[in-house]
Image 1 (cartoon, rainbow, N blue to C red):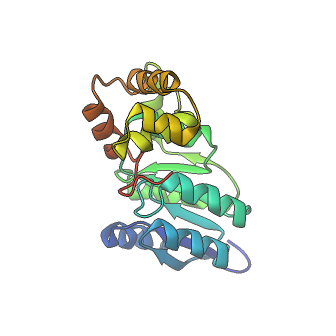
Image 2: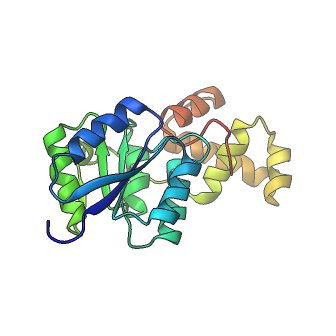
Image 3: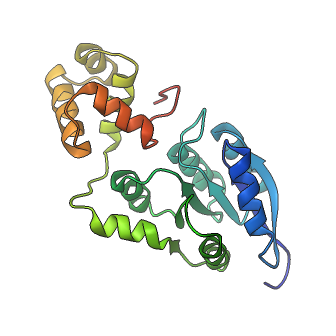
Length: 212
């Protein structure tokens, strides 16, 4: 790559993952890691101040979810390419990222050589979706992203709110809340609220603070 070094920020709450990604970046000519974030707030701040060429983002960041980080970095640094590197393998979670048109999508289990190839393509302005992600999505029966309202209801369910409390909070009827709850369970193919929350936490649809 010609010209000034390409700036890369790595956002993941596990040092082992960050170090592994740094090893891959070190193999790319003309690229350097200029910042690391351990949580979503730090990732947003680095995206805003450093305006990197590429942000490698974990989908399940503490303090601010990966999807929230994605939106904020897009707002403050629209030219930054954003690639999600996730351990979540459910088709629903991956489809959500495809729906917002993330620039790159990788599983943490991807071979290092494939990650390097993908990162190089991203730095050239292209999009890259890892082969295993493509396979998961192609084999999914029906993948329908959650709506913003469904996500809001899911967060409030996680906080232990009743249908009536959720209805008051969102200024909708309790019947509408119940419909959202039923649709969430159908989309995620679960049969109880406990299963709904377990799935949501496992797949990064909620963070530990269940923020709206």
